[in-house]
Length: 250
Ligand SMILES: [Zn+2]
Image (cartoon, rainbow, N blue to C red; front, side):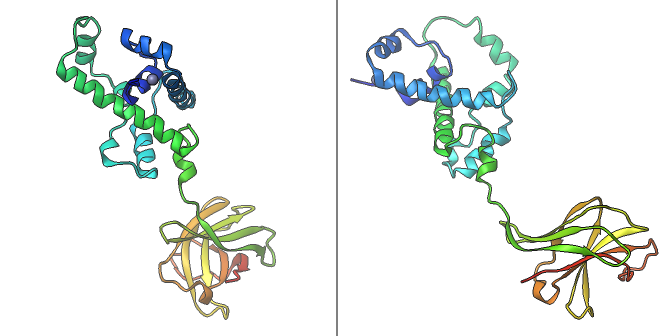
């Protein structure tokens, strides 16, 4: 028995009316019915995560395509047609002749349905038919070191310092503090154990900051994390007024 093509199965799952021939086959073929309902579940799950009537932006497909390492021929967004319908094309289609479809139309249709099948298959492979799938696959930063920050005398703030190794090899210092009070502005420093040399990572606004650690900087030579209160005096040196401090174990 000749089964229905994947393209046709995907289209039927999306709600297209089956042709008389397809109906006849489906009536007697459980395998094809099962495949359609499997596609259908994926399609419905995918749709249920976006607001009614809206379609995920093409960037979503681009992300899925890249995350799953799909073939370049599948790069076109399977839902592109629903994002922005060409008015001329739509108008020409609706009252369209009931006769046989043209060769070009048929080719366009086949090309379109391949992506639908690919989209459904990609979602199945990902194991989670939601558009959050890309996020789940994105590599997470690795924590290299983390230390509580203690207030210096005359301060009562508390905080933490964490070094993240990002997937691209960059390092970031993630700083938190219980308040953002300062006479001037707050600056974050990495300091050598003997306090003779230091590197400024930048200004800290609010109670959390992510600051890039310069490439090639040997953290074990600058393990002390320090947040200072800097006056607006144009002097780039450390003011000598530290609010919070902690030493990373590396
Ligand atoms: Zn079949």
